[in-house]
Image (cartoon, one colour):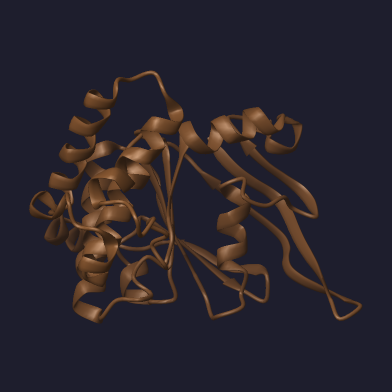
Length: 239
């Protein structure tokens, strides 16, 4: 479905080349739950941005359903991001002047095809599913870190994407709240059947996934199943 094929990403830094990714290949099939982990600077977030079509590889291809994103027009890539991909960032990126409800409505309003009333009802449903039924009219400044991330997750799932990409979604949260958010994501992944890619430096959270890729210095150094502990951890987290 979504695949990075031998991707390299090189940035210019002070007149020299900085190779952030050095020939990474990874495939995300329908319903996959993949954790990407490794130390800071390993290239985890860069890989996620390439998979989302937010950036382009220096060489290699990112392909959606077999078609390289590089062969899509700007309009086609925008449609790919809006329809097929949901993104959850570490820093939430909610618009401060909008309520939680309005923030969640945005992707569907951009996509079009539904009335505002229908979009509003669907946004309320998603906020309820992430535990924010009582916070729909609160602006971001009135929400806790965990609530902000829950709203961001609802927004990412608003258009029912096929792939959910999460970039350190627990990085700004305390350990208890971070575990709750990771388990919420795992539960939603099961319920929706969406493919989930979770970038994290925390091995405990990575253990919730079915597969784990470890990056170091821009290369994959390990790719394994997370083991028999993963299903038990996921059962604990979602209902």
